[in-house]
Image (cartoon, rainbow, N blue to C red; front, side, top):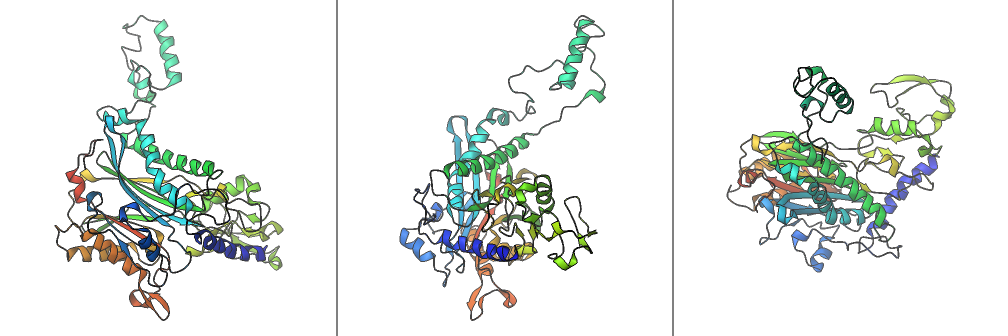
Length: 492
């Protein structure tokens, strides 16, 4: 098993190279057509020759918006290709003002980053389609979102109950009907004349923003299902993480599935707007699934975690372990079952699920298996995002208050504090009226994370290793949100 696990990592990395070796971004061994061709973000306006030149793993040129191009809110963007781990830049980005239903005025602003692995196919498809899934989900609740004065109805198409305490509660409705048989409507004993005591109030109050959160969550699931379906007829390689921002109702809805990250920098304060989903951060969820459905482990892995691999000579001895119920550690007597490879193994960026993948949420990866086995990884991966909400109307934002979105190539080498300090210092030296300042700040941030090529590789401050990964960064100024209507129709 150990030999197989060692080769699993090599096989997975080999799959990344193979998936990225095709100029089209697809699987070179597949005869299926591509859903969409490989590309760089449309808003960069690159020619085919410029795209080819950008894929230089030695020079690693930083791509930014052309001077004549603009993104909503004067958003800044920059990207750079990896140092050679894959032939193509497997990051993808999208920024649009999405008109979901023109007649109804359903318009929202949208930013997204997708970090592909084992090929760029899933990232390319998601960058073209996820925003339309979000729009489709929002269409279903547009009338409710328009009526902010009333809470969302529990049941659509149902007449409101005369007793607000009983709305949506079937057992209490039955009691109401029974009581009405004992007294005429309006009589002292009538349920419509005498509200029940507060202890009967059981219906949750749902906020309008929860409908937007639900729409984003369902859109991610629909996007993942579409990738799975269309893999049967199109060449869609690998998987991807997804980080999205939707501006609607005067709020930013930040959805994250994977290990990209978003932070808000406001008046020198750092506000995290996402959580990375890794084998370590989702250990208990993964272990619980392995415990409940051991067949998914293929008789090759154990759901238990140990500080290191268990050796056969340690059978019968007591060793530290933990399972899905534990945050701490305890001792157990080692059995033969514990000799299996751990479901989660390694630390930090080297942690892997089933010795294969280092992220636990994202889109795609439906065909991914443990090397040289029939054990699928997908059951352990979730496409569901965590959505955090930031209300822009609660604060007055200055020209230097921004939201920074970045793929893990940025955050692997720079901390939240380092990013915030770099962005704040750069913007402080720019003309506040210069709309290019946010693109230049994004370029500076990517340059800091990439570093400078020296004899010993790419180096950043204090001779630390620079990022050899693809890096993509959005810098979104928040002050422009105040100039835009928070209603569903958002003029731009």
